[in-house]
Length: 218
Image (cartoon, rainbow, N blue to C red; front, side):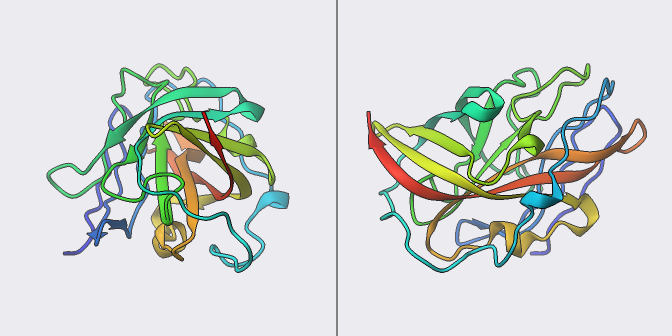
């Protein structure tokens, strides 16, 4: 089927559609934009844009078997949040964490689990309908080399290193680049970002590209 594409009022979610093929996301990002915008969240620096292909060659850590993530930590921007499984709605669009829980991060539960072979996807609100910061408010401030830790139900912690942080216009979201899989253990974090208007909400999405670099046993 073709991807669904929806827009909403400034107090509604902006939910570009997703198409799921074999458990893989192949289109659109998802995230809430606020109704009352207090200030713009950080934008990624051009210095930390993706310098080459989304799936680089080279050594990698051995992938882990599937296990659900339970918590995400990003020390450099103060993130320490529980994770919840999110799926698709009736129209095939990826759901977000509940808007009344802006401190909760979501992961696409029908796709790759973080640390396993493939591209795992996690989402989070950039802010609330009142304009207060959400769990991924500072995602655009991440820099290359920053560490992302995801604790899993199997008592292992998957440690990822940020390779790049980019900002895309929502109408030109590069689905294949973001969601495509090389079979290596990778992670994408996605939230809203870019310019903002009260009529349309945020105009883009911040995407963090990260690769598995270590595994710790808890």
